[in-house]
Structures are given as structure tokens and as C-alpha cells.
Image (tube, rainbow, N blue to C red):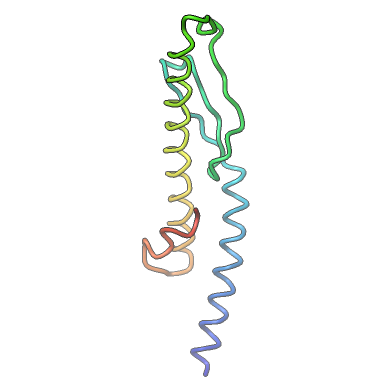
Length: 109
């Protein structure tokens, strides 16, 4: 019975830490860039886009398709960085609870 109570306590701790981690992920911001920095996207580690910056020299009608491609590339760059930040948080959470690495792999999405 003591093992069961210990498991329940550990599960409650995990839930509490996961909630705190989700809040932290909302505060972590990354920036993705493309076009040599001509387009940048700022995003949280929860994948919420906060800002898009486009260099004024790209704002010409004939450059529309290039700008669209650069925005997509910058968003994908920011997304990769946000996913990396999320995985780092997950690993620190798992390590802090004495859990094996990878056990929390899909819980942040």
C-alpha cells in the first residue's frame, strides 16, 4: 500500500511540474530567421507566433513570392528552436524527478 501511495504522490508531483513547465514554455521565446535576417519570426516554446519582422527592402509587389517563402522558412526555423527549447525543459523535468530520459517525450505537445 505504501508503494501505491508513493506512486500517487509522485504522479501528483509530476502533474504539478508539468503545469509549471507549460507556463515556463509560454515565457521562453525563440527567433527564427531567413534571408540572412531579412525576415524574422519570434515565437514562444509553445509554438505561439509573437511577431514577424520583414525588412522594408523586401516590400515590393514583385518580391511577394520571395517574401512569402522567407516568412515560411523563418517560421519553420523558429519552430525548430521552440521544439528544442521544449525538449530541453522536458529533459530537465524528467531528470529532476529521477525518471528515465525520453519517458516524457510526447507530453509537451
